[in-house]
Amino acid sequence: MAVPQVDKKMLGELEVMGFPAVRSIRALHYSGNSNLESAINWLLEHESDSDIDQLPLVSREISIECGDTSNEVRNSAQGMRTHAQERKSEEQATAGSQKEISEVERELNANEHEEEDRKRVLALHKSKRVEEEKSRGRIRNQLQEDKRVRIQAAKDVMEAKRTLEENQRKRMMESRKAEQEEEKRARERIRQRIEDDKAERRRGLGLPRENTVASPPIVTLAKVKPIEPIVTSEQLRDCLRNLKKNHKDDNARVKRAFQILLKIVANIVKNPEEEKFRRIRLSNPVFKDRVGNLQGGVEFLELCGFKKLRNNSYLVMPRGKVDVALLNAAGVGIASAMENPYFGLLSK
Image (cartoon, rainbow, N blue to C red; front, side):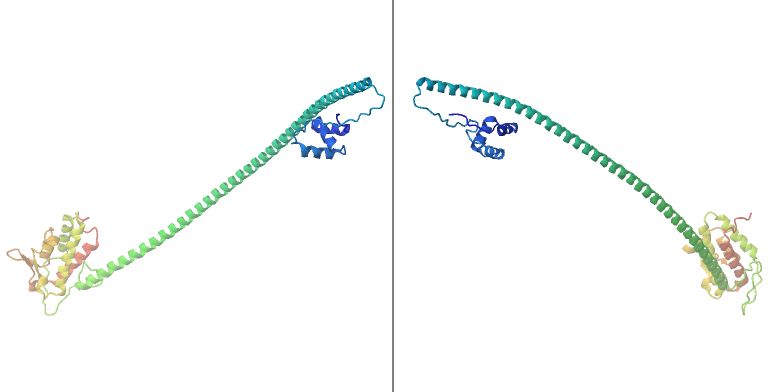
């Protein structure tokens, strides 16, 4: 049995590719030494065979001629063994050489792979660095844009605030102007109402429209003999001044007293025949609280013509004692005292 002869060139190429020498010989032998592709296909198809790493052996034909002696046979066998040993040594040397070449090639391939890996790593690192730089550039641009937007927004807010404040200021000025005009109209209405009330009171008292306090008109009634006034207008005003001064700390109470006194005088002037208007019960709670308890209240009525009864329970004005002129002067004095806030306060 002998190792089959194969193509040395294709065997070397298979070993350079990394295939073992034994497997390469089996592949070339069983693929018929036809081409390299067939041998590679055979290796791929039979790589899982159990005898893939065993050298194939083929029969070797030995021709024996007649007349050969046993020595010649022995010599021939010895020569075959020697040739096989030499062949084996050569194959081992070739296998060792191919193995060394394969290891060197593998190292070179490994170095090439390492260089390729290094290049890929460098390229990847460079690409990553470029991408990071682009990302930083985008972030920087976004920050600048955000800053610009914030600045513009702040400007817009300040402008809106300024506009709002300006509008509020205009509205306040317009509102103040409207309030002033309304106050002016309200004062005019109050003044007109006071004038109307004054005129109404004068009409109620039978007084003329003009204010003639110094020279009050004398109203003469039919069938009533004029009575010469005993009390003067100045005495009436002095009594009212004293009443105001005696109670200057309670203006509301003085005002209520003046209102009651004016109502009493006006009722008598309008209805001098009505006894109920000429008779006042001193114990009346309203009269006592608003006039009777004030120093000068009863005195003023007495100046107007009222007299106390002996039991001091009533103030009475007899029908024959009704002095319309005096009552008119009293009414004018009371109206003047009510309208003048400084009445009785500036006099000594």
